[in-house]
Length: 183
Ligand SMILES: [Zn+2]
Image 1: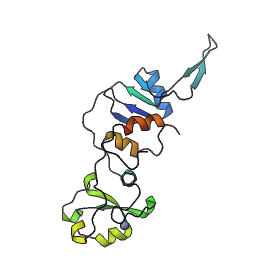
Image 2: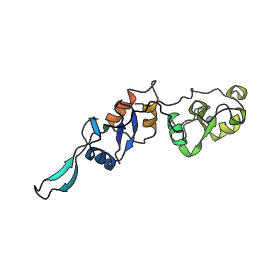
Image 3: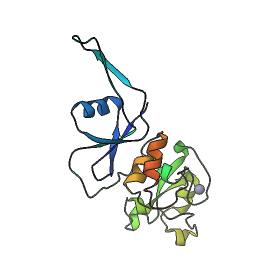
Image 4: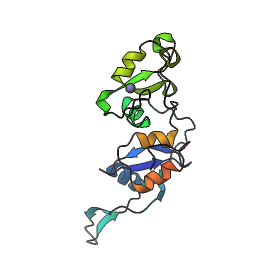
């Protein structure tokens, strides 16, 4: 199912809309502009007086009226975390399925580490067990990459399984660095 990327007027991504939600936003007059190649038109009812069927053409990215928020805290969940780390263990590098990965705290929670993007990585069960209650230095298990907090464009990309080419182009231009998952 296609989704529409919603932006605020500052161009920051603010979520993914279903086609129906996007149609509603258009009908309300909330859409200020669209970006990208038009999708297939969506047909509505036939007007009784004219006999003309209404239709609406959506673009894959729409900017809507509303408040511009400055801060954005990307929610942390395993699905997006594992996508950030390319579905590989950040200690041994082994690529794994989502169900075989765990969330490892680089500085363990018991040692004052926090449950935040900069302190969590995808890890296989074996490495997680082996690292146990230690820091990477103590366990002699250096990280293969530095864990980072995704910016709003990165997070919206990671939060969606499939994105359209125009959406990918818009988001990836605003990534903070070259990312392995940005083709
Ligand atoms: Zn591992």
